[in-house]
Length: 160
Length: 131
Image 1 (cartoon, rainbow over the protein chains, first blue to last red):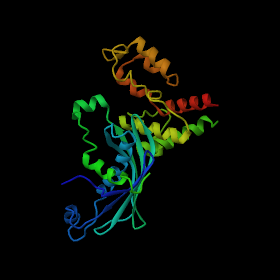
Image 2 (cartoon, chains in turn purple, blue):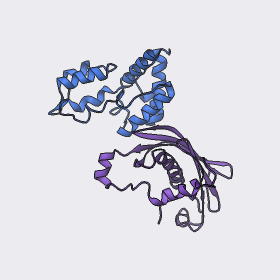
Image 3 (cartoon, helix red, strand yellow):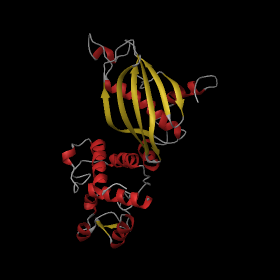
Image 4 (cartoon, rainbow over the protein chains, first blue to last red):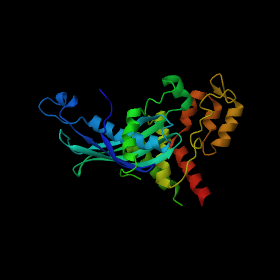
């Protein structure tokens, strides 16, 4: 199973904001268990998609040189359930960005309906320690993650 | 320039948000780690929120100096902060009340310095120097 919970970026302003979409498909495994006969997107996976949108916004701001890890979610509110067939839009804005970490505020919309809101806090893994623990490879921003963004940033696509 | 009480109230509100504690749990003498359950990652969150709340910049290591806490051998020996370390604390944290700590400067007690009062005094100093 691939751990990519966004399908596509639709807007990206470096260091400022990002917008991504995620189409919910009944074929996704989690719908079978959450819940049988009543398929709703697990709230933590909605949050994961928002965090991935925010994480890439934070990572790109430093040209993906830092290992960005989700450190804390000080606030998350879920307003409605989301189910198969919906398209979720993840909107994040950078609140703070410093060498030690960053925080973003984000919201999730589905056809204009507010589905969730959260504040997400990211830490930059200390360079020396993360090398010891995880090796030199940047495990956070896999090629697949950057590919998502690369598609948007290609000439001719809407972006800034 | 806000009064000390106004600053304290805002600091307290900030900690309620950052640490997810009840307002009545927060007292001037509450320690961030021991009483309010702050973990290391919370300190950066607190810094972010204070910057936003008060419109100030808090450079890395100014409110929560790191070198002493990371066991620099010049500053810490046998689990105790050395005289040089104490001087460093005085220099870098003029807003800290070190009287009690100096009597028994065990590293394990360092976190008790970080109280709600300490943050209030720090912010007050920052706002004064800005005016």
